[in-house]
Image (tube, rainbow, N blue to C red; front, side):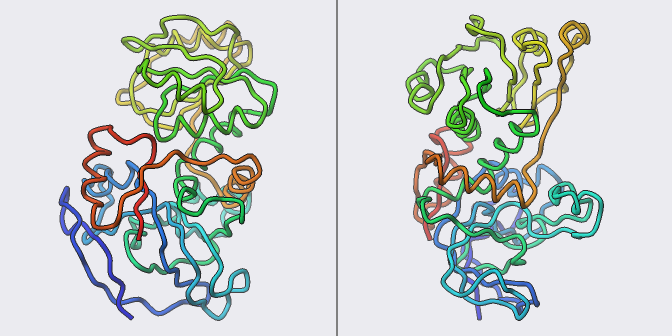
Length: 334
């Protein structure tokens, strides 16, 4: 069987049609017929080899929605026709300390779908079924893809930073990650303050569930939130006046990063000592947390706001993403 894909043949190149032979299914593998796939800025980083882990031809796409077409002999969780989602991770050792604690995403032997395999900008892909996830029937299949990366990234970051309910939570940035963080925090019973550099996004933030919006200028909030914040999540890769943000946290408050700032973070430790605050970061999520994310998204109707593009316009979608013109996630239809 031949798989038809769109691939970058060299660093920074536009995607062009590329055909590859489908590898034989291993015992735990599934063949998935792709229906749609989200476009994430991590795909752009991989196309450009920003992380020095790309290999070409590179087939991007790690927010995959599709249907099982075939299964290896040891696959018991799925059958042909089942709707599934696939995210960033495609493998782990499943035996180390992190894996056994449900932190497969932190495994030192983990493999990434588009770094160690081929992604979802293709009519089919092969994936280890143990990193394939059933999609609740309540989820809109076209819009669900970005939950498999953007959604799990912000939900995991919020949960590991201590989010429960009844808290005051700040979300820095209103983009592909931020608009999902607002929804998860608000729908789970928290009061959300959205921080954005764009006044034109205020109505969007409120419609997504934010209780108030604070405008940022030159990396600083122009006003203080009405209440101290228990948790602040950073969802954009920019630098801010970190001491100012730490000063918005309540006692025992946490500043957590779901995106990497452009410059190293410099802080005054007194800001932490004075109210026992902390700083942390969180990457993607393990399998149990992904299942939890999808279940909650279905139950509380949490879905990305998307701009759909047909596969033959994938390069236009990438150009718009590079230019920061997507509100808020691009999805490629196969």
